[in-house]
Image (cartoon, rainbow, N blue to C red):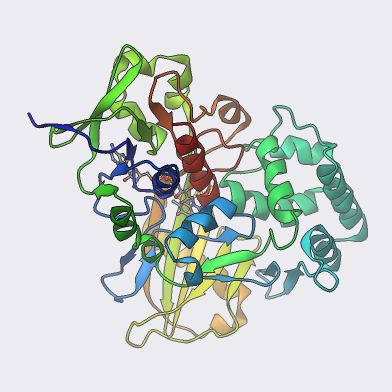
Length: 443
Ligand SMILES: Cc1cc2nc3c(=O)[nH]c(=O)nc-3n(C[C@H](O)[C@H](O)[C@H](O)COP(=O)(O)OP(=O)(O)OC[C@H]3O[C@@H](n4cnc5c(N)ncnc54)[C@H](O)[C@@H]3O)c2cc1C
């Protein structure tokens, strides 16, 4: 049995966004981190790979960021990757309907004043909403901004109904917003987090609501991490996960790796998902109140599709797909021979879809998007790839929100990070980055 006295001040478990953020913040505090990642790649659930048939680099799912992602952008800036994501000047989302009609949300304000004013004007310009719906929507926005909505333990749907939002506004505006930002359905997700999303992103200041789209595979964003951490005196071990966290007398002692090496360290930040943490926590600790919610956490799937057509669609950039199981479409670049257009499609909270065969999903979604974009009628689908992430994110329902554990645990030297921990944010890249920063600040 191999045992090492760690020359590192803190061990970070997991090289997802939360782990990278924790390591970066630890370095800023003058600490030397050792990051341990069980797989061969960096980025966790935000990663890319080469599609064998086309040779194109695709993500495990299209990721989109918003202007309010301060913690995540801080991480990208540290790694020198900020230039690899493209910002929309102001939030601009075309909506496409199966009858071929479309509408545009363009949150442009007056002069340089966008923010809530731009969003209000953008919503007023939407032609698919009637006057009364627009008025109630704006009243709701004002009440959110003034802090007058008291969501308690409501779901987002309960809140929307109590705020006089019509069925049409819920279906056309709030369902897409909630699915995209919280990966859950309005009748499931916590109204408290929904209000945070509205305040920080959609009705937030300046360009908080602008979308940012990566211009490369997701893994490329995080590639510089290894050399960066080594330059700071830290290190990363890959392809060798943690089998067990050693805790005695409520004090963390170190970690045991899959190859049985024991690494002693006075500080451990776990930045792995709750289901993985449950496997490596000592039995004696698992039953502590702080960790007792771990096995009750529910997850929500995201299904991603890549469709290669023999024709280019220069008119498609990104768009919301309405009244369909497909929710979003993005045009990507392709190197595939004879492939002109590569489209990425996303279905969040797709519980009804996730168990369909990949062939059925691809054909159903291709049919749906053809209806929305007449220019696709005569295009031939030459290749497709469906990626099902069954546990894409935790589902933050009101009960889970109440039970999300803090980063500070009752075990001395042991801290939690991850998009699922208590940040007050949805389970996103920003939530993950923020959690890592909090965990490192507690050491
Ligand atoms: C398909 C999809 C689309 C998404 N779209 C968006 C989006 O558009 N915008 C957005 O903001 N968010 C999006 N998300 C959510 C976002 O990807 C996650 O919130 C974020 O990546 C979570 O980061 P994390 O570090 O908390 O966890 P993870 O990324 O899960 O990182 C945990 C890491 O720990 C490692 N690990 C596990 N067990 C061990 C062990 N025992 N020892 C060592 N290492 C271990 C794992 O291999 C992994 O690398 C999406 C997620 C998916 C799946």
